Each structure stands twice: as structure tokens, then as C-alpha cells.
Length: 166
Length: 309
Image 1 (cartoon, rainbow over the protein chains, first blue to last red):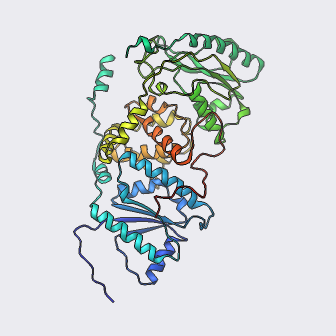
Image 2: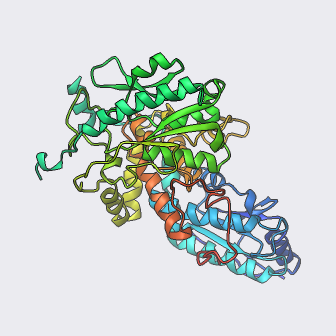
Image 3: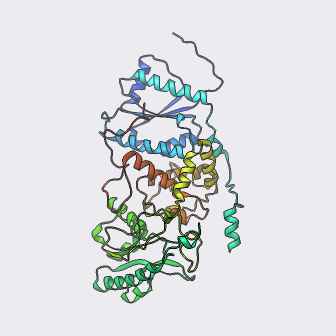
């Protein structure tokens, strides 16, 4: 069985931070059920969504991710009782911070995928990949990463005023 | 807008200074506290620096003036162990400092019984680079004070002074926040990129923050390194985002980070934004009452999850 693979000009890098109990098992189910989903996604397994620090998302963006998926157990199904409830609040707030800094939230997806939802995993990953593909590469963090030295402008009006005050 | 219409009556500060000296003397003599953390006159005329007074005779050194900007709650954290070793402490707190103290108590960093809080009414403090005995008006008032709603601390052991009627100042930070929120994401990115690339990573914002008391900061760690430590734009952006995230729901809004920043990065804007979001999302607000759990340390089963697929 070989499905026709479409060629694209741009293949986005998607990093998926998943919880080992639900989404990882769900992705596994998608695999054992021989479902197809974009190979753009790199899965990183965590014990729980509660373990996923916003720093990981920043780091992934800096290291070249174009889109990020964070996925775990449905509310109430957490292996550790409340990890995903805490994660839900944390990411709700982190999203607002990213938005305030000026990051496009379309590149960040949160989802609940249980171990039985292989189909949903395929759906979520495909949707995110296609959305990010349509948007093209994410330049912001990569450009920032490439800027080598501190290059602060030291001739701002405020600093000049402060200098003249001395 | 004329300055004369917006000048705060500074008689309050002298009245509070007298009451403060008497109170500090009483506290030290009666043994209620082993040391009083307050402010004393700095070397430059009109300036003030934090002071720790242990001798009742030295209580006369304490002052309260619009130059008393420092948030003294900082001296009660783990980060300043050598201060806590002095025994039971008394601390002078303005309204904004009282919120920080309440936050520390909520986080079990401080027991209410271990500290004697001398609350002082405050009509505002000077903004950066104001020297001498300038009048407290539109031009010299700190930005955070323009929209302050915590002039009189609640929940202190003793409260000194009454707040005079303050003229209504045009809010600066709220306006700036609204301006940023109205921008497109690309404009906001450019705004923050410009500000963060100036950062020299001196970590003054961290050292001066009462809530940054971790003994080992995530951002100082290598192996694994979460945040680049050199002052390059990428690491700076990450550091400021991590800082905003770690303070979300904890920040008491004293704006010390912004005051201490040598590069004039508008850090309190980030703090205000996070505070605003947490109020909208979870109804949390920093207040005078110690809350057992912050908004990111608890949850409700019916929290909004419209952003999750």
C-alpha cells in the first residue's frame, strides 16, 4: 500500500509536546492502525502536560520550529489527577503573553487527544501542518537567534537626555 | 494641564516621618522586633536608601519622603537570609509594598506572626532620576503612582498617616497598554524586539523583585540550559518572557523591576498585561490579603478551554 505523496515547496517543522499516557498512546494507535499523517511532526514525549514548561515552547521556536502542538489527556483523565488542569491555566496565560509579545497564535495549537483517539491525532496534526504550511516559515525567533551581538541603539532620545543631565 | 493643579500636598510625608520614628523607637525598645527595615536619607540631598535599624537611638534616622521608592518586602525574602537572621523584623510598607508582603505570605515565604508591619499612607513617590526636594507633581511622580489605588495599606499592625486628596492624574501605563494592544502582532514584535535587544542582562529586575527569591534561577542553569545567558537578542527575549511568566499571578505591581532597569525597558508593562489577563481569565487580583494559592497554582474543572481543540 503506497499513497501518493504530494510535493510541497515548504515543509514546516512541527514539534509536538505530548503526554505519555494519552496523546503519545493516541499517536501510537494512529500508527498501529496504519493511519497516515504528515511526517512534519516531531513528537517529544513528556510524563504529563503539567511537565511541559513554556520555556520548551520558546526553545523550540528558537531552534527552528514553525509550529508547535501541545497535547495531553482530556480534563479529568489525567494520570496524575490534575496535571492537565494546571497545564490548561498555564497555557491559557502563556498564549496571552505570546500574543502580547507579537507571536502569531496560529502557529501554536493545544489539544486533548486520548489514547483511543488515533483519528483525532491525525486530524489535529494534519490541520496544524496545513495551517502552518499556508503561513510559511516562522521568521521571528529564527532572525532573533541569528542576531549575533548586542546591538542596542545607544542614541535614543531618553538616553541622550539622561546623558545631558549628568 | 498645568502642574500647579496636579501637585500633591507633601505635608503627609513629614507627619509620617515623625510618627514612624516614634513607632520604630517603641517597637525596638519594647522588643517587639529586633530590627526595623525602613528608609534613611541617602548621601545625595533629598535621596533615600533602605536602612535596617537595630538600635532605638537610631530610630531618628528613619525618614519617609517621596524618595522612598524601594520596596522593602525584598529584605524579608529567602534571597536576603542575612536580614532574617536578625530575629523578628519590623518592616515599613507603603500600599504597593504591602501587596508584595501579602503575596510572600501567601507563598509561605513569610509568616504573619514573624513580621511586624508598619503601614504608611503614601501619596506617591518620585519617578526615576528625580533629585532633591522637587514638588510631587505630574512631571516627577512615578508612573506606577499615577494610577495607584493602594495608597493606604490594609492589614498592617499599625497604620501611620492619612492620605491627602490626590488630584486625578492621567493614567500612563494603562494608556500604553491599550496602545500596544491595539497594534498588530508584527508591530508589537518590533516594539518588544527593540526594547529587549537593549537588555544587558544585568538581572537587576530579578535582584530587586520580592518574588524572584528562587535560590537557583532557571535562567542561571546550564546543563540543560533553558535560556541563553549572554545578552544576545534571542536570550534576552526568552529571559523576559520567562520572567513575565514566572511572575504572572504573583506580581504585586510595585514596578521595582522597571525602576531598577538601567536600560529603561518598560518591564511593568508586561507585568500589568499578565495581571490584566489573570483578572479576566480567573478573577485574580493582587491585594492586601494573603491568598493561599495563586491563580496558576490552582484550577477549576470548568476553566475556559476554548483555545484547546
